[in-house]
Amino acid sequence: MRNVTIITGASSGLGKEFAKHLYSIFIKEPINREIWLIARSENNLLTVKSDLNNTDFLKIRIFAIDISGTQGSLKFKNLIEEENKKSEFKIEYLINNAGFGTYGPFEETPTEKEMEMIELNCVSLTGICSYSLPYLKRNSNIINVSSLAAFMPLGNFAVYAASKSYVLSFTIALASELKDKGIKVSALCPGSVSTNFANIASNGARKEVLHGKDPKKVVKHCIKKAKKGKIIILWATKWKITAFFSRVIGRYLVARYTYLYNKRPYLK
Image 1 (cartoon, one colour):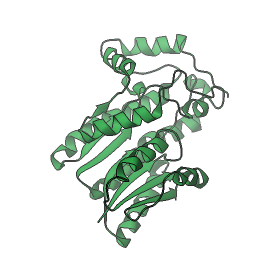
Image 2 (image 1 turned 135 degrees about the horizontal axis):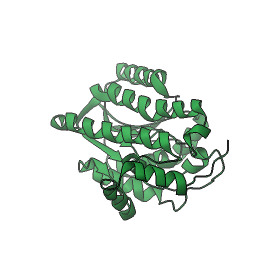
Image 3 (image 1 turned 180 degrees about the vertical axis):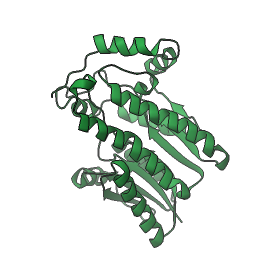
Image 4 (image 1 turned 45 degrees about the vertical axis):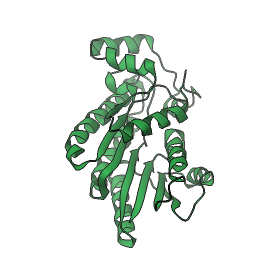
């Protein structure tokens, strides 16, 4: 039986780092494995794949699929069903990394883009988790990429923070339901990480994330903790402190403060 790792949003950022880090682990273990890289851009996926060499026991496969929303989730369902018909497999790691954010006050951000964000960040992730369940076995890992923003409502980041709050809540509940089956479920909740996130969220107004942490370190820590069954994964001390104080500071106060004093540059 094939052991498959599935990474969505694998063409850049944390998704790319997950692929590289797990490859570095798997290449030392001669077990029949495959890493499936899923994203919309085939060219970007090919670039990621070029850094990872196929071996007799470790295959790198790319799938250029738009997994957004219900229809995208169904594309994913069809993919894994067709693959299982060819040869049965189990999912070793399911890493739901695909997602994006938007900067700016809600009334000034494009409504369609906000809805597309919910479709990808919430609907797709939910569907992919559900459709993957038959292929998850004892000691399988689900890692849903949430955010430090999940712990509080944020002005100028309203829909993104709300969508990641959903991911965190859903992940914790799913972890409780799958515990008896030996399936580990984790929510990675990073703060600022040096990826292309800010450039997309700001529509080009901010090219790089401010004070971004090294994505390699974030991913390495995540895999280590996920294997041990940690449900909520925070790496940097600053992130842990922020998450802790989110329990005692009023949610409206945080939202109001960030709206007034934490302006995020964006282009309309």
